[in-house]
Amino acid sequence: MPELRVHNITVSVDGYAAGPRQRLEHPLGEGFEGMHEWMFAAMRDLADGKGGIDVEYVGRGEENIGATIMGRNMFGPQRGPWEDESWTGWWGPNPPYHNDVFVHTHHLRPSVAMEGGTTFHFTDEPPETVLARAFEAAAGKDVRLGGGPATVQQYLRAGLIDELHLAIVPRLLGRGERLFDNLGDGIDGYRVAELVGSPTATHARLVRR
Image 1 (cartoon, one colour):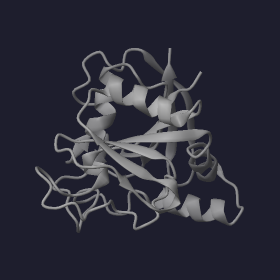
Image 2: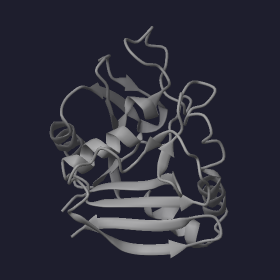
Image 3: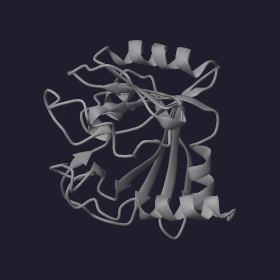
């Protein structure tokens, strides 16, 4: 049965998954620079045919994915009504998704078809409805849930996530957006199925009990 999966969510030791004051110059918020270096290095190694713990976890995130869900904070730095519709994401004309991507936002706009098969759809529907649409678009494959932290929290509170992979990097940030805040009992139905360390990150995989 298709699943909703979260991969490569990078957090600091004190639990922050994004820095404060996200904007064009700081896509992941202030102080979060370098937090994803483990992943970029693993992606380079994967492309070069190399192995390793980080490479294995990055590779898992690409397997059997047919659609993607993300929050507006992951799609871009703008807040409130769109100034115009020229912004089409951080990734250039050929985003790395190559499938339908559903973007949570209170400010709707027409869908945007990009090179390589990525189409961004903008929705203010509840998580359950968006997930149903994503499963339909995925045509039997799994759906990947991206960030930001607030979007992951929404789906955790709703009990919709089947698998959550965290990469914990050895840094203390002290401020920003914490991944496991504001969940109530939303985390109660999960257990840690894997905990594996590499020289650059500790990988934790949470699954439903």
